[in-house]
Image (cartoon, rainbow, N blue to C red; front, side, top):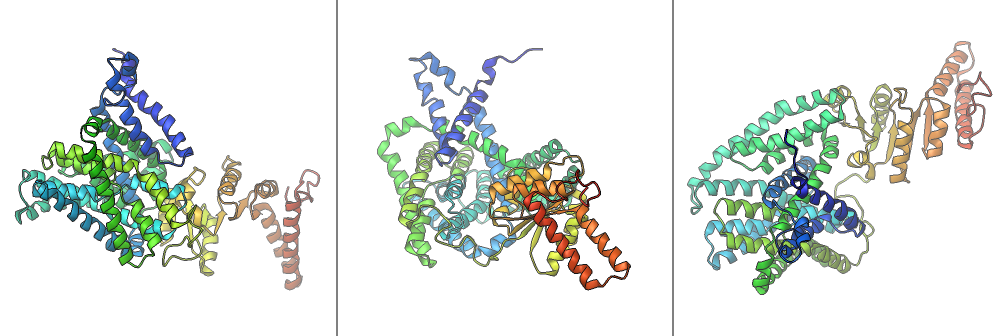
Length: 595
């Protein structure tokens, strides 16, 4: 058996080393790591260290040797990104932001696409090439802008919400654009004609087949996998869904990104949504970094040196056009000028889908390579300007952090968050029923797929997943939750799971009310030390209820009995909070209730 040479893994090692350096460094600087991958791609490509190979032999060891193979693998990053976009969508969310999504977002894409396309046509491009160029350059960067908004806590201010709405429509527009390019490519790049509309029929049938397949088979498959209680199997199933749906779309003549987007939409309304997000996120981040590394490698630095004024002029012109256009539209939608300019600057630069659309158009022969490469260079340079544009918008808006000047709630949203229940067994179901009786909204999390399926069939808001996994509760709404109720039992062998969960949540939300079920008084004491608002030991509650039944059964007056039970419960809580009392030290009093 032949063993691979160490040099065969050089490109992979270089990428992993780059990721290990760039991601923590850029996160410390509060800059999107994607910009670091773009810069690293330029450095590790033929225009960077590769150009020094004849002068410095060591530079060849730090150069990517197979950029095409790396780019093919990196394209999966866009597939995973589209899947995550679909997974984060819901009809309720779209309806809540419909004015900005389908109003401002649609007008921005149409207006910018028409102006850029018309400009390209006036400079001699064909109709199809102009349409492809206009569509590509009208889209901004979700992958760079959204992390910047999150890091600066601006996603909930008005500018952040409007920016997200416009980016959302742009992401929704990618799939129709790719379908249209594929159909135009089959038409040999000819001019637009009514006959092309008939070409949409096979694409529509392919999408309908994908939706039907997902409707009938996707959820049953995920439930079957979840019942196995295997993290490895669940991860494998998630990867199969993303890549499998993409390949199904590719076999039908569509893009893999479109297939993954449809699969994400189908899973968005299921109980597995947040757990799938948690599993897929690391793959998306790594593969998307690989995609931008490949984009940086493909950047034609020589073109910048040969035509600096033309490249810079196109870059600045596109950003100025988008800024002016979005500012005018935002003002027309009634926004204050500070909000409008902040939104416009955030969306001024090109995005990752410009590379996807232009690469597809060049591959299909719709856009000449010279024009496409020139626009790819301009798109890359504009993306590198996004942090500066975002900082300028923040300064103009007169804020240092988001969420301070405006309420963090979207229009029409409830002012109070939902209550999160961890565990939906017999205790969790009873707590949920009592919350319903008092009109308090709640969502529950459980690791038993059968329990979650039964709850969702009865109309409950349940999600499958592991609440102890970092980040999962955040996706379930921990950041806006009103309270957390931990009802899961720790008798299954992992006695520290509840304590670990409480410690993790308290670190993230010091202000959150946390109520936890405890096995006994000793565990309740540990939970109080970790900062729970209230802990309820099963042994103590069972003892108090039994005492109440005995006293009432022996004829004691109901009023004094109930009052004494409440009084004893309050005494017990005070003893635990002080860390003393016979209930907190059962070994000294073996006859105590908490023993």
